[in-house]
Length: 166
Length: 302
Image 1 (tube, rainbow over the protein chains, first blue to last red):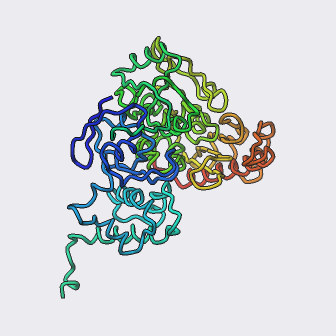
Image 2 (cartoon, helix red, strand yellow):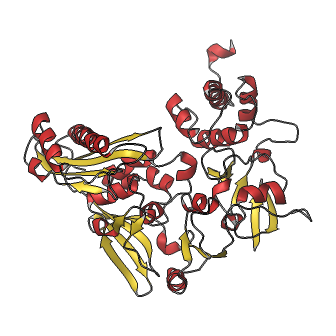
Image 3 (tube, rainbow over the protein chains, first blue to last red):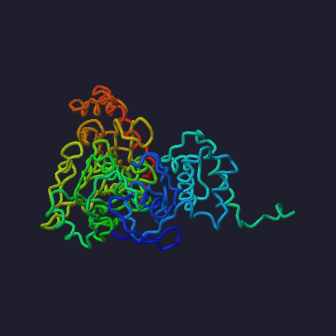
């Protein structure tokens, strides 16, 4: 079956079996290996991508269902090759990753949260990443990373007070 | 796909159809007993991946315009079957008019599954521990159906017939859920759940809604229990109408209503545990609903 996908801002076509998941299609047809195959039945969150801006599990969606939607993978977050998005950088700064297997999913879940909430509470962050399993970090530094990214995003281009200028 | 590589896929193969109208979807379903509806797919896709379900054909209803949207009409809120759980969670109409639904939605799965999972999908799947079916039974919602012969509907209590079993027949699909609006000025909802971990399947869940008059006297109330038996149950606590919902009669009423609950026994929890916890959570849900209703000012009309 032919599908017409918008992946990371580009129109991409594929001919896939209906039973092929969006995850397998991203990895095999488009070599976008940042979406990781973990449990492949919707428990671990390693395969999280954005579909029309919302965090979604790409193993729980067939590519044919994604026809016409905007898909963002971890490869699509950085502004230019070799650069990191603000959230990716925050994960590096706070050591929010160890083995890295859960990291693309964590970053995209955080991205979806920060798109509509720039001042998340700790509970908001925990809820946003509650569907993403990490077996290395113990989550503490991941939460710090999201808090740090939110703080930077709030301060970006914010007018400075007179006291700060002096 | 690189040449020579054999594609390994977890689900068995199936045909995929995306009809343009609800009538076409019903005709497709009526004509093929191995066809199944897919919408958000958050429950069906794992079942396909584990080959617990092997439909020959999937009929994707997610983009049908007839099934989308949330609207208030004649004392009810009608939630289209393909409304995403995340969308309902944020909806101001649901928050104002069906507070019990707004309260339970954060307990349904995780944010990424709520972004795709639908209200109608959860109802059609009929998991006895699921929160949305519990709300429909507790509030006495109508399940609206699309059939090859046209629209039909069933009270939620008749719709759920057993674990993952509903009164849906071949050629029918859930088109919307009609939740009644309580028109009293002071309405509050309550919810409590016990599960192994947050957002996992509930061993026991309880949902309650309470309406109070200006003096805090109970005008109406509803209590439902999920996860205990084969389907969600509404408990009869009508004896509390007219009371001030004091602690001791409230406890007695819930205990009396829960006496003949048929509780399931499995490796997660014994029947005795489920029955005991159902009473405790039922009381907590009613108390929370009472507090939330009390917090609404007696003077301000909604």
